Length: 446
Image (cartoon, rainbow, N blue to C red; front, side):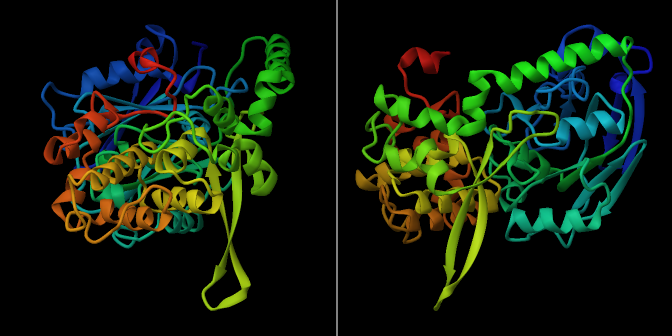
């Protein structure tokens, strides 16, 4: 670590006391490489044995590594917490502007403790932390609206990050995500539920600092070599052109694309949800995480006609990657891009992890087909592979939880199957729903 590098600073925030302090912790960053090593050490310090994942004693740790803010591609923040979804380690990584904002605000890590008595959101500007009332934001239907309000209210446009939860986080769905910059997420394992349990609606971080380097000429040479390697590499070029959605077609070809709750590894409609098809027919923009020149984020432009007026359309920009395509597409038998994109969008509105939500809905569909559950459990929602409308209704019910069935599904597919049966087709490992690759048992063991 270089002298005067703010990476060594750790910001501690107590939500219950509405207080904060900063500690100089160079040893954390000297003992291991990267934000992950720092975060796991801080979690070991802060999370007591036997802590309830949704209790005030479960901390939220956010950390970045020493290359963030200095070199291209280093653009991720790691979050560590005790997972409410598995009861085990919760680790989630997100891009966007989160890592750069934390680094430029002058921190290597942020520790959030306790629980607020009322809904709040935090604003971190350099050495100051503001505790803002979030009562008006709590309960808003759409996570998009929350982000829009915060962008207007808080300064720092262009160099700040806005992390927020949707209704699923407020309701402590155990696979709720934290959304950052609209199109990136701390997904998997329920960080959104931990935010909700602390009544923390959002976290805004901004700062403008200069980071120290010892040899400017050598630094520039190294930076340019990394930038050239990232932008001219054929490997990176495919992610710029098509994104991770490029994986759909080859996975389908080898029988590794999970389809209809893994009843098959091939999908007859794979072509019309592939990266190539989406790029040709729906691609609206490519965007990049801060300090990453690859720009692998692909946004689909979905036009929807207003009711009773065929000449007026609303255009939504929706982020897509391989994992959302598998979870909201092939796994649910949805082979038409508009329906698949609408299902992705609704998971975003609610603030759910799309992978866990897709696996849960696929299991529920097969359970309904096999008579393990009925329309009484699903609150009258007829779930069927290939039919998006039922899935849109069910996603909203996972958040609102009108029946015992949806309350069980809000805790994950493994938990729901333990109550209603069908564990043999509940696609989870250690309580966490499967990712979008089925290339053999070793894939899942890995």
